[in-house]
Image 1 (cartoon, rainbow, N blue to C red):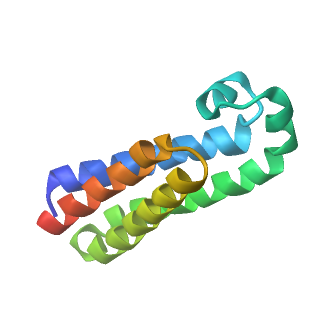
Image 2 (spheres, helix red, strand yellow):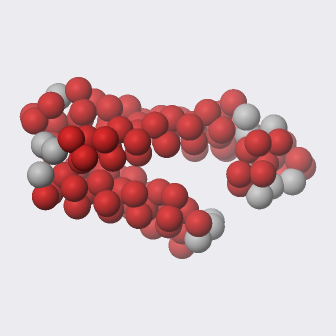
Length: 118
């Protein structure tokens, strides 16, 4: 596996840890409200849902880091979790915000391409 592929996979994993933190711990704080374009009232009323969503982002990150920890034997794990990130990004872009396409789906597609090319 190439170093570039592993760096991209690690960056995508870190992105999902960041999203986990925003959604689970700072959902109703100014930084998350700005990042997700929410009012205080909306953030307050959806805090529990966001925490659940953040947990799922944590699972995506954990899977990517697990794949990295396995070295060459982790290629299948990385591909599976990158596919999960890609599908989540495409669904989010179609249903929630178009910017999710560029924040989540495009990096996952690049990661998959790099994994397959290495």
